[in-house]
Each structure stands twice: as structure tokens, then as C-alpha cells.
Image (cartoon, rainbow, N blue to C red; front, top):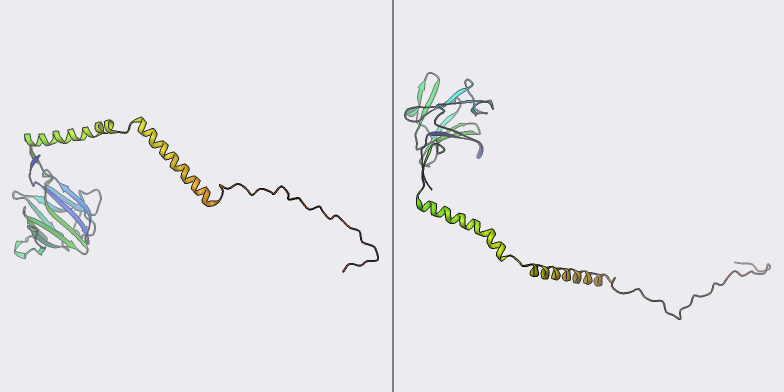
Length: 217
């Protein structure tokens, strides 16, 4: 299936060091993206210094998006997969105390404050126009046929009742052989040693009475 993606939305990723903690995606119908240190906000942005809450982080323009930079954050740009570099002062727009930068379709912006980094780029999760060709339908049909043939093949190629009974008999015999070998190793398969028939118990000597004039030392 061939698709053509329209990069209409805004995609945001929040990193703590090198670990990605949060991900947000905003569709083209959301003209303003608000941030605050609150879970009820569209973009809960903890760890960044925000002059007010909610803070206008991004808004749609005729060209794309305008991203507003928090006052204590540094803004960097990576274009076409290159390394991040600070955005030049000439490319920053200032309106009073607000600083903003245009996000182009080739950009990946990064707002950094301390160990936190917020990445912003165009989202590929916008509208998609899909065109299905006959060749694609053929591949789908082949995959469905292969998937359905697996259980049927198992039924025909599976073991018969006779083979299952034979396999069970071999398993039982092997278990008995192992048990017999273990009993032999422990010596419990030999009968108890019989008592010799001519062996007789010695009679008890009984109690003897000694004369009174004899002493016992």
C-alpha cells in the first residue's frame, strides 16, 4: 500500500538527558499548543521556566509553525539530520519579552534547559492519502491464503492416533527404565539378606546365684 503523508501536525518529544520521557502529537486542527506544569494541559512541560501558565509554545502560521522559546531555554536547530547548532540571533523574532523562531519542514528544533530537552518537528501523523493498487491487493491475498493454510496443513500432517499411542508407549517404557536404573544405583532393587537356616539364637544364660561367702570385685 503506497501512501503520501502530509506533514500538517506538530510532533514533540521530551528528553531527560538521553532518555525520552514523553511524546505528544498535535494535529493540524489545533492552531495553538499550550504548555504548563500541569497534567491537565495539552503539553505538561515540567522542568522548564515558564513566564505564565498556560504558556503559548507554538502556533500555526500560513507557512507552518512559530515556536515560542521559554525565557531560560536555549534554542538549537538540526537541519536535514545534521548536528544541533544554536539558532543565529538574526533568525530569532522578538516581540516585547517574547522570543520565537519559525519551524520549517526541514527543521528539528530543540529547546534546552538544564538536563531537559524538548524536540519539535513536523508530524507525519497528519492526513494520509492512500492509493491501493492491484499488485498490493495480490500481495494481501497471498498473505491471507498462506495464513489460512497453516492450520489446515497441521490437521492433515498431524500425528495419527496409532502414532500417538506408539509414542506414549515409548515414553512409558523409557520412564520405567530410568526408574529401574535409579533403584539399582541406590541398591533398593536387591532383596533383603536372608537369615541362615542353621543360625540359632543363643540361649539366655539366665540368672545365677552365688554363695554368700563369695565376694564380687
